[in-house]
Image (cartoon, rainbow, N blue to C red; front, side):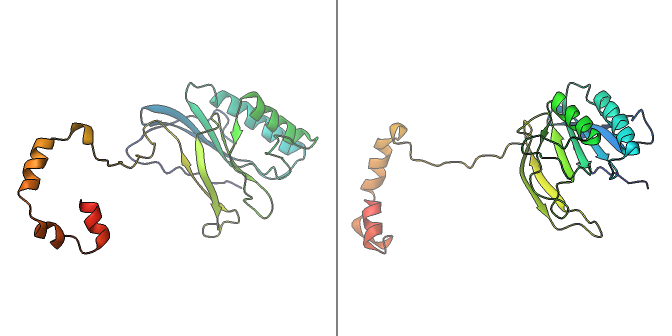
Length: 208
């Protein structure tokens, strides 16, 4: 079964396709320049199973991923890995060759696994791995899209230039006030002018 792995990227970012050296693997890869920083984004699908064929497929996949990780930019790998028994809180797995070959790859390359919520029934099958522990934030899962049987995953990414713009804080700069002009202005006012703009006693105190 062929699984389609699409990428949707904002048109303002520069994107280049990366050639996958092994054709039968369900892997697609792009390089993205975002806010003047380079990122390699890899999407991967591994069919379920832990038999000999599954082990061979994963070994070939890991070899391919190792080659794709040979880049100076931050690397992100995401997709359906079908490894329900992996303990991502402790980066531990069962004593099984399929699990161990993949977890060894994750640990050797210093990947962080960001998904902590279940994505299908009680399992975390869909993973987001990156070489930065702070790259992914505000990750949530929601109901599957369309006819999919896996939960959708939404998250924000941290990239230089993509930080939230802080709200401006307004304050009175008394140290640099022009008090002579303020005094001249206040001399033009009368008590009636003050009280007409103050509807309550608290407003009178605020004005004075």
